[in-house]
Length: 155
Image (cartoon, rainbow, N blue to C red; front, side, top):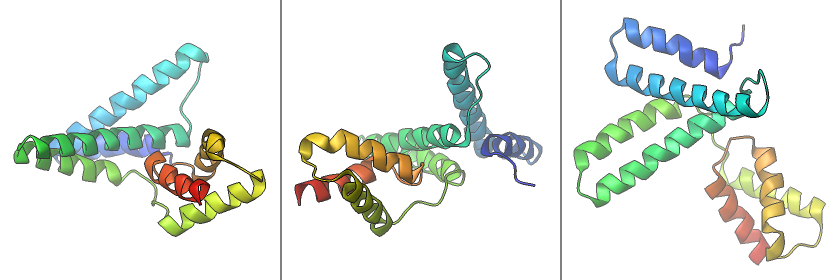
């Protein structure tokens, strides 16, 4: 039986609660709250809406990005202990993300999109990004995809 990522997170909260894993419990509760907030936002737009897997992954990816940004900020501020705490939280969140695509795989997708869309210039960046992001389906960050698209639109 395959369970959804959101259901797995809820089950892992119970497991962390029982095994008294404070950090894991804290991170998973925060993630569950972020997912619930996303559902509330979506429900306001579409009555009875629930999150699909892509939206759940996007939320996890967003929370992971917050941790990466915080780590960078704490390191710049000389707050090593806070950076380490954020890094531990990031590691927990990354366990819920799908396997990342390699640079070569991203570049191949970008080349396929560029081949299908035809003659493009820098002005078509947004159009190319939208198409590529639809194909990578949460398996690469927008930052990594953007780098690959820029590389090929320049060349």
